[in-house]
Image (cartoon, rainbow, N blue to C red; front, side, top):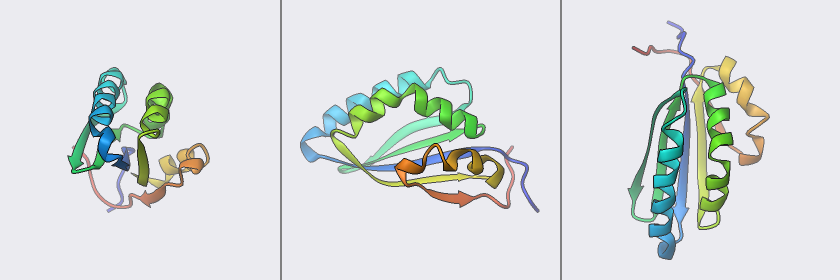
Amino acid sequence: MATQDKCCTLVPYFKVSSDKLEAFKDLCEEFVVKTNNESKCLYYGFSFNGDQAHCREGYEDAEGILTHLENVGSLLEESLKIADLTRLEIHGPEEELAKLRKPLADLKPQFFVLEYGFRR
């Protein structure tokens, strides 16, 4: 059964400089405040395992991701001064991923095509 779901998830992982973990967490709070007003954001949050951070985020569609990245661009630049983006996955249906491949190419993400499933 193919899916009609247009939801896209952005799955970034960061390695934070050990002496900058508190500064990174302060930026996470700013990310959350800024993202909270985005109409196409379905969920958003940060989780940690030592000096590794993950941002758990989902959007209604590709436009939601592009809007988000524009909204938090300066915060992302600041966070990448104290942390490395070690992995970036983008999950969604091909129709939506096609809208993201070129604009996000510089971030070198892995794209995972959603083929089956449902969303309530």
